[in-house]
Image 1 (cartoon, rainbow over the protein chains, first blue to last red):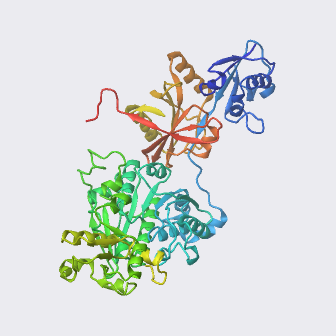
Image 2 (cartoon, rainbow over the protein chains, first blue to last red; image 1 turned 120 degrees about the vertical axis):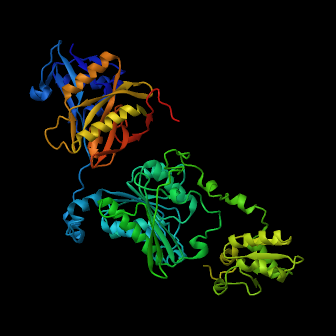
Image 3 (cartoon, rainbow over the protein chains, first blue to last red; image 1 turned 90 degrees about the horizontal axis):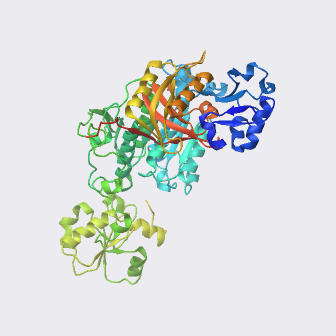
Length: 474
Length: 147
């Protein structure tokens, strides 16, 4: 009987045999006899239409059956039929542009710095935007419009009224919708040739490397330190550039952190600031157009990296002051002692960034020695007109937005000088916008000897949400 | 998962650099068809394509038979093949997936502007549905320990 010689990768489908005796007078009969005995082989030898796959070579002795009589090639008992994989492959096809795309990108195509070649590079590029907020909005809108072929988005939030002042991805009608659903729809609306890949989850040490893997460039548009360090470290470990920007009130910063070519974020900021020292935009506010400026700078740098043209912001920190409308630049150097990108790194895998930034899990934070009162309890106290003192530690311009008429208004920063206005004999409830600053005030008061003092959990915003909708939330 | 010695990986990177702007290709030989795969030798092979060698590679079937026979004689295995993607990332193309065989490990090296960069290893699922990235573990050469 003729025998069939199997290549290494197909042997497991034939119980490990390298050679199998078959029946049949032609190649087709012999192969049929083989696959009917070992069904697992069929899918690898034949396509769905039942034709021999193009990358499966069949040789009778040392001759390709394509040059003999193909399937009808006769076999004698002494013949050996070899199945030989055609090992072949290659780089992805260059992204071709359709006529519609050529019309769409014509203002790019007529620039020699972009041209057809550059536009194809944009189409083949894969950019991951972390966050679809103030920075991620203009960033992703412009990347989509410019024709970046694949845009990944990481966010797990829901569109809120307070987002609309700067997050131009979203419309009023999107309030309450998941951000990624709204963002995906908007970006596809701008450019149907773009593939949007949504990751509706929090970026964590467990999923970051997996999410980053299939992207060429990461753009960090987050507003908190744990995620910023996580994005930095994951970019260092995967060798990807991190196009970075951050914003606060009227000021912004932008750079490209790329350990292979220059410094990383940890070269600039080895340690995070103590928790609470640097207020977030939710606490301190931000001029709505500022993320527009900085997000567009991120988009510009991203596109330059893809086109490999110009002078990227690697090793430079751009400082933007919108009030004076001045742009300054600081030179950044790689830190030879950097724990993550230096020659002797001590951080070689992703860590717990919440702990690194000194942030305690919520449950632990609330029991952090700061006694609390719920909004329901506060309502009960106010309804009974029980004797207690309500202290509002927000800033004066916030009193103009919302306040309790009976409260004593002492901004947190001035509290130490106003302690004499409070009596430790009174029951005191302290509040702010959402509970952060007032917790600090409670700690300060307790250190000063006040014992009957409690923090309003969730602040005046929670009270407005749960108890009294006539109070505006902000 | 497939494990490769840093020195052998350097051989692949050198090959990618030399072949640039064309694609290079070669065989991964070693042990562990039934257990964890360990590459013990890499063998350069000829890109037998007549044209489009900048974005395609093909290994001649008879040269494939030769390398497999050689491995059988030495009592080792053909674990898979490597190839480079000049000016493209180290990700398999659709063309790679369509032509892949199960059980083989396909190592892809990105070479950007002549410089070898990312490297990844991929395996085809048994139903041919997905070409999945697998862990590529890079070991320091024998006798060299990390400080």
